Length: 310
Image 1 (cartoon, helix red, strand yellow):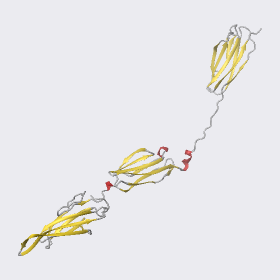
Image 2 (cartoon, rainbow, N blue to C red; image 1 turned 90 degrees about the vertical axis):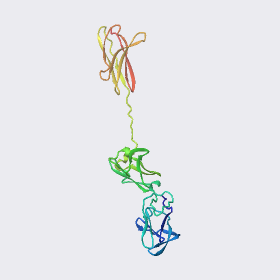
Image 3 (cartoon, helix red, strand yellow; image 1 turned 180 degrees about the vertical axis):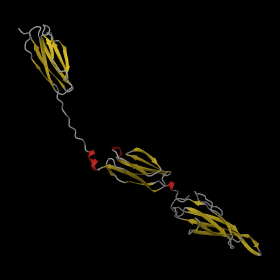
Image 4 (tube, one colour; image 1 turned 30 degrees about the vertical axis):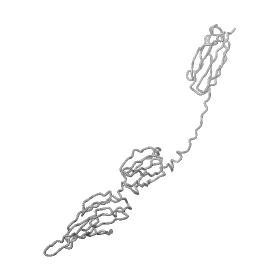
């Protein structure tokens, strides 16, 4: 095996009487490569049919320089013939070379530029890089040099889950999660080559990138008004009224204060049931009452005095 741009010499040796000549073929065609032959006569002379024939050997070197693929990738055959055009040695056995190799009467397959030893050079294209939501896009990863083993796609450093032996990644019905930079990694035994393409959102969907305008609503805290009742006669009844406005939900609580300043809850209501309740006038029920209204936005209070008539 020799790299592209390298050189190699192939040798072939043939023995016969008369001394053979050697020709070379490349993929069953006569080669135009440089050839150097060296003959070595043997001491013994042989007699065939009354004629004395000089025997000997010949060694031929075929020189290959500046090897390129596929011009020098193929089967090299060494053919030895004598003056009687008798073919005495011919072979084309397949052998993969890793170093300079000499084989008597035969030379095998010369592998030039094993492409798995070249790191892939990658180019990536897309049918459309400015898209709208719902579009379809085909991304193609082309290898300009080197033999690819597999393709892997990632989007903005997140693996898309597409690891295939094919170069095509198809995006259908594009969503926001499909927008980003796609990287194609092509790997073989020599390493990994990469290329990027960015899919952007455009057209009628470009407004999706405008920062939203937010308006905050300021809800109203509760505001209440109590209605001061007229003095009431003992044992009669009176309605204590608490009118509340403000954002709901509301909680309404009435308290009754004692002479020592302590208080206790005498009624609870809400924005549905209201804040009014009825009191029967007794000696214990005369005094100060306070209505409290509360919501998650604030609270308010107002008081009345329930006094005895007479």
